[in-house]
Amino acid sequence: MKMTLIYPKWPKLDRQTEFHLPPHGPVVFAAEVPPEVDLSFVDENVQFLDTTTETDLVAISTMLTSQLPRAFEIAAKYREAGIPVIFGGIATMLHASEVMEHADSVFLGEVEGRFAEVLSDLKKGSLKKVYDYMKALPDINTVGTARREILQRDLYNYRGVQMFDLVHASRGCKFNCFPCSVAFLGGKQFRPRPIEKVVAEIESIPNNRLFIVDNSLAQDRQWLVELFTALKPLKKKWVSHPILDDDEIIKLAADAGCWYVYQAIIDTSDLIRDRVKRLKDHGISVEGTILLGTDNQDEEYIKRLIDFLLEIELDMAEFTILTPFPHSPIREQYEKEGRILSNNWLNYTADKVVFQPKHMTPEKLQELYYYAWDTFYGESGYQLKMAELFRKVIRREIEDNTYRRYKVRKGRSFGKKDLRP
Image (cartoon, rainbow, N blue to C red; front, side, top):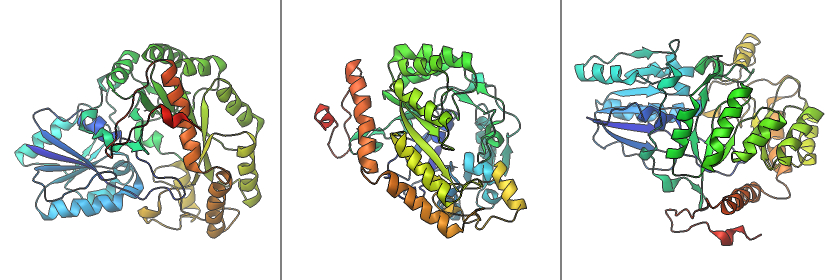
């Protein structure tokens, strides 16, 4: 049996330099595909998709809402040729009813231990329209090592610099923040994987640079102590979402190879200022994730927030516009208030205004989005700041003898000469 797994392309964030990370959802899913299935994978963001290639089943993995329009186009081409198409992934779960109109089958929920049923039904010619496992989360102990060998690694680099592989140490999130859909997708309970399994998976990844994609590394202090202690001997270099703001935990993270963190910057308080300083004091760089358009923000607030980012010498900043994704608390609120302006999913890229802001016009918020990027990166562009982050990690790799040159498709490699100012 031949199966084609596809990760559709999507519009990238306006103003941010385009780069591509190896996708996580497809490799996690691929681990559940039995070895007797001839599986091929196409990441349309970096590869050409030939829809005429012979296959028995097409699986479309969708992470982002903005992937859906292209995913529907792809599905239509295969279905017209009589090839069954099944959808799965985060965006599929968020838009299940709409996706069903474009698919032969829809898989909802986490995949571990469940995909065998799909293949069995396919062989019998009785593929179900919906496989709904949203309310039946698998035992976290069954989550194994992702199948990264399906990736064409040399395509994931930025100007010759090898980008990081993605890995997760836990699922679920207890915080249920207002713009986020994670509680709907993975539950409100923190579900840590056994640390020995996390370590084994990380050891198996040939890349020295990783992105631990857990929604938050601030949910269980003792688990973090054990995790970071176990990661230290591996000498991997990794980035993550926020880490528990605790001096001991931050030091353990730095010793375990934490390179930089994505830290939400929600205001100009001393709490945020001190948190960023603590991370930087431990040698951990900070990329701020800044959400524009919340109900407490007006034009002057946003401008002051950007000045604050420059004052605290943030290493990088990623500005996004508040986007009311389905099944997030903010979506429910804005629907009740009649503030949703667009359901064109191509505009749900977090760089376009699709709702009515409370204290300004949609046009003014869009203008402030561009102002934020242009002001923060006015003296040194995004590319230079990103290059400095990579120079830092390469220096650390050289210091602990884990640095290696990464060959890329165009023949260039990133070596010591690139550390020069």
